Structure formats: structure tokens, C-alpha cells
Image 1 (spheres, rainbow, N blue to C red):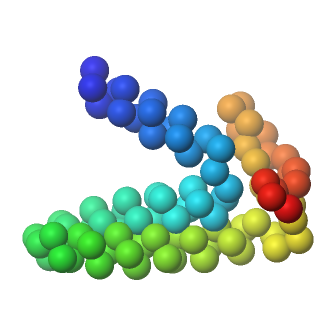
Image 2 (cartoon, one colour; image 1 turned 180 degrees about the vertical axis):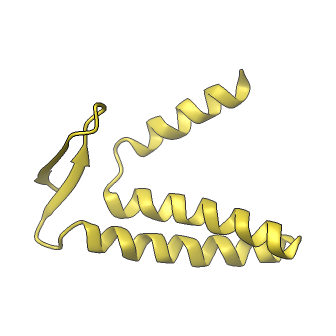
Image 3 (cartoon, helix red, strand yellow; image 1 turned 120 degrees about the horizontal axis):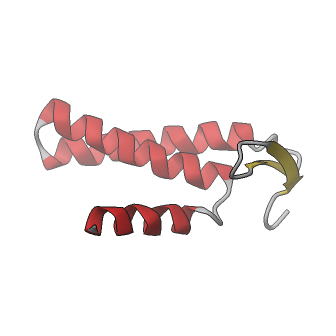
Length: 87
């Protein structure tokens, strides 16, 4: 039950994020997990999280099209474009 609540809270917090912020978050989580598994140390997890976060952010920035328009996906999977927050 706690894991379900944690997952729902994490998804809720990411709902208002830009594409770059979401991809940075997922990249950091994936990089940290991979770094921890492969090295078995906290330092490896930290380096993996840093590299994954930076890489995810750069991928997300490229996906934001750079012209002030962001890509959004509805709950049923449709994709639409709208002005990015703060643009």
C-alpha cells in the first residue's frame, strides 16, 4: 500500500513538469539504479544519477522543440502541442 501511495505521489508531482524536467527525473532515477547495481556503492549510484539526470535533461530539451511549444500527452495517449510554461 505504501509503495502504491508513493508511486501516485511521484506521478502527481511530475504532472506539472516540463518535458525536460520529467526526462531529467527519470534519467536520474534510472542512472542511479544502474550505477548502484553495477558498482555496488553509493558513489556509483550518485555518479549514475548525475549522468542520467544531465542526459535526460538534454534529451528533454531537444524534445521541447526549442520554439516555445511543448509536447503533451493526454491520459488516453493522444499527443498535442501547447505553449511551454513560462514561454
